[in-house]
Amino acid sequence: MPADDNPDLPDKRARRPASPRTARKPKPEKDPGLRGLASWSIWAVLLVTLLLGAGAVWGAYVGVGELVEVDTEAGITPAQRITAAFAVATAVGVLVALVVNLRRQDVAEQSTKREFDAVFTGRFASAAAQLGGTSPAERIAGVYAMAALADEHPTRRQQCVDVLCGYLRLPFDPATDYLADTSTTTTQVFHNGRTVVEHEKPASKPFDQQVRETVITVVREHTQQLALPSWSHLNFNFAGSHLHNLDLDGSHFRGRHTKFEDVTFSGRRTEFRGTYFDGDFTSFRRAKFAAGQTRFVEAAFSGERTSFHGAAFSGEHTSFNRAAFSGRDTSFDWATFSAEHTAFNRATFSGKDTRFDGAMFSGKDTRFGRARFLGKYTSFDGATFSGEFTSFANATLAGQTTSFDRAKFSGKTTSFYEAVISGEYASFDGATFSGEYLSFDEATFSGEYASFEGARIYGQTTSFDGATFCANRSRTSGVTVSFDGVIRPEHDTKITGLANPQLNDGASVTRDGHSFHGWD
Image (cartoon, rainbow, N blue to C red; front, top):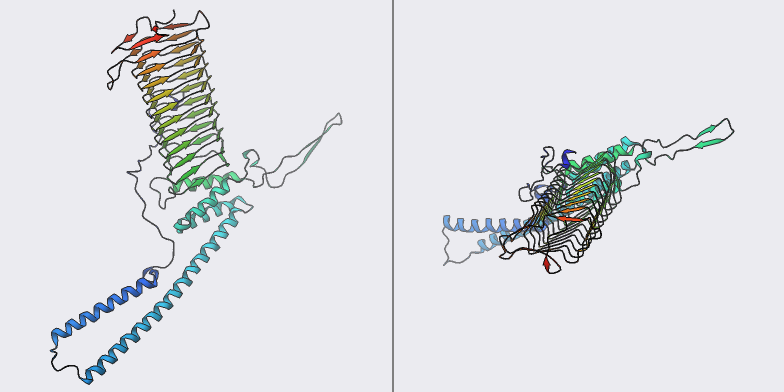
């Protein structure tokens, strides 16, 4: 068993994402441009100048009044009138000159701004042209040129990142990436006279994987917790792209939306270890995880909505071990897990709604060992577990409602060993258990009501050995576990552990209104 699939082994390589409360906030950045007085608006300069002038006049008036005696009874002499007139004229002239100079400054300022915009536009066009170049080296240079432009122009940063993400959305096929832009047609003539012509379609941009890895590396380096300048606050749209051997370990995505919709992940590995998703909406809808290893170990999803609706997980290993889902809505509806090993060990679901409705788990083993479902509503309605082994051992189902209605468990073994079902209502209504062995051994039912109404138990043995039925600390009455309408199609089907169950605080186990003690 891989280390990531064992809930009891710590993963020292994974990095736990920092809390947004403790993460250091970057200082506001400005585009390159005017600095000092030239960066002030003309009205701000005029206002400051007038205030300083008024202050100087007032200070001079008060100072002169203190130093020179003025005969107020004698009145103002003609000489004083002439002096005052010249002073006022001089002041007006100075003010007019000041306004004219400020106007010139404003014109120069606007001209300089246009020059900076022209420089950005020129560099942006040059970087974009490099990204469209024919040689891999030229395209890689274009990636770094666009990244440098984004770093220097914070207000245009989203625009530059959109171009890099757009590059990844271009068509890409790893199978033909090694082929040159020209190819040779091979003709073979066999002894029987049959002629076979072989022709391989060349890659539109050969050796593009190196360029794409450079884009991902640049994104990862700029979205780390302590990255300066940081791109974490930006929106990222990778929708529809093909990402080969993706590695975004430790990245922090805090933009309004992060989109991986319809993305194909291939190669040896897809890494989101310790990655933090804190935007309003994180979407992996209909994504195809086909890499050998897919790891979301210790990833954190704290945004408003997180969606893996319709995603397909194949390959050898899929791991969400110790992942944390704390956003309002988390959806794995209709997702398919066909990887040989799927693990959500020690994962925590604390948002309001967590849904795996219609999800299909068909790999060899599926593990939710020690997982915690703490939100208001958790649903596996209509989910299918057909792998050899399915485990919710030691899991905590503590939300207000936990539902496995119409779920199908057809694997050899299904285990809820030592699971704690403490929410108000837990339902397995209409569920089908057709595997050889179903275990609720040592499980604890401490909610208000647990229902297996209309469940179909086809397996050989269903065991509640050592299970405890009791009230939790917030209730005075015991839990009621109902097997109303449970269907037992085969007489050799057994339900054990209910002959002398541990019924505490008035708990009861019933079937159709009567005490139920299982089938031996």
